[in-house]
Length: 118
Image (cartoon, rainbow, N blue to C red):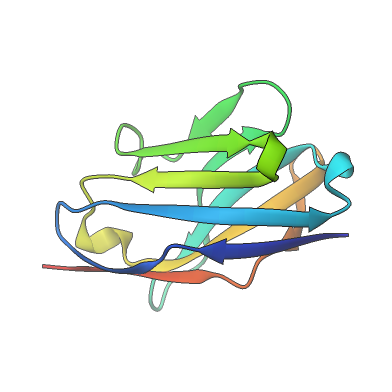
C-alpha cells in the first residue's frame, strides 16, 4: 500500500495561485501513475490531472487545462499541482491518488481544502 499526504490548500482570491503537494510513502516502487481529483461542495468527485510515475505522460481535465500544471519529484516521492488563475469553480477538496495498475486508483490521501473567494 502507498500512503499519501496532501498539503498546500487554503483560501485564495480569484485569479490567485496555490501549489498543492502530495507526498507518497510506503510501496512507492509499485506506483504506475498519480492523479489529482477534487470534490466541489455538493458535487461528485471529478478528475483534475494525472501523470505517470515514470516518463512524462500527463493529462488534464478540460476545465483546468492551461491553468494547472502537475509535476513530479521522484527523489522526494512527491507530486505537485500548481494552480494559477484560480476561479470560484475551483473551490473543492483536492485529493491525490495512486494507481498501481493503469486506470485503477486504489490509494487515496485525506484531501486538502482549496477555497477561492470572489
